[in-house]
Image (spheres, helix red, strand yellow):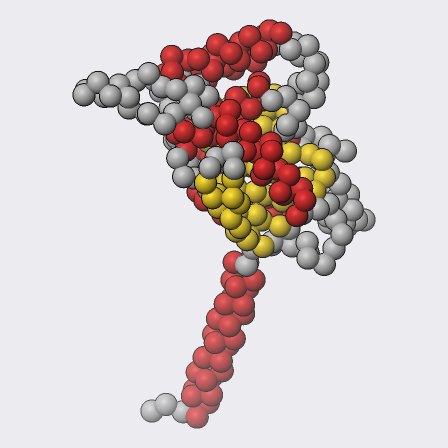
Length: 299
C-alpha cells in the first residue's frame, strides 16, 4: 500500500523535475537566439543586369547604439550566413574580435560571377561546359560600384572591409586581392579553385607577389583533405606566399586534413577572422570579463 508520505515525495519529485525542465527550456531558448539580426534586401544591379538578394547581419544593439562596425562581405551568402554569424558572435563574446556587420550575396549564376576567365573546357558534344563563365571582373565591379556604396550609405560602418569566399568564391577572393588592391583590407580564401582554366589565376598570383613591394593586407587561405589539381595548386600557392617579401603583408595558409571541401568552411571562417584580428583583444574588466569599448580591426 502506498502511504501518504510516499505520494507527497513523488509529487515533490515531479514538481522538481518539471521545474528543471522549464529552466532547461528557457536556457535552451536563450542560447538558440542569435546575437544580432539578419535581414535581406533586393539590390537592383545595373552592372549585373539583374536583381540580387543580399543578406545583412547587424550586431546585437545596433538599432539602439551609435557604434560603427567593420564589414565582412561573403560570396555564397545563402550557404554561409548562419554559421558565420554564429562564429562572429562567439568570437565577439570571447573578446577575440570586434563585432562585425556581415553581408552575404546570394547566388544566381556563381560560375559566371566568381571565375576570372572563360573556361575552354568542352563537353562530349563539343560545346562549352561553362558557357557563362569569366565574369569575375564584372562581379567585382558590382561590389565596388553598387553593393559596397549601398551598404556604406545604409549602415554605420568603419572603413575596414573583409572579403571571404569558398571554392570558386575563394578563387574570386584571391582575384580581388590581386586586381583591386585597396578595395578590401583582408581576405579569407577557403579551398580556392586556383586550378581553374589551366591554373591561370596561379600564374597571375605569382606575377603579383613578385612585383608587389608593400601591401597592408591580411590573407588567410585554407583547404581540406582535397587531392588532385585543387590541392596541388594550393600547395604551389602556399610556396609562392612563403617566397614573397611584401612589406606589411600578413598571411597564413593552412591544410585542414580532417575536413573535406564542404566542411572546411566553418573552421576556416573562425581561423580566418582570428588571423585578421591577430594581436587584437577586447578590453576586459578586473575579473577578466570582456567589457565594452570594442574598436575596429584596423586599430
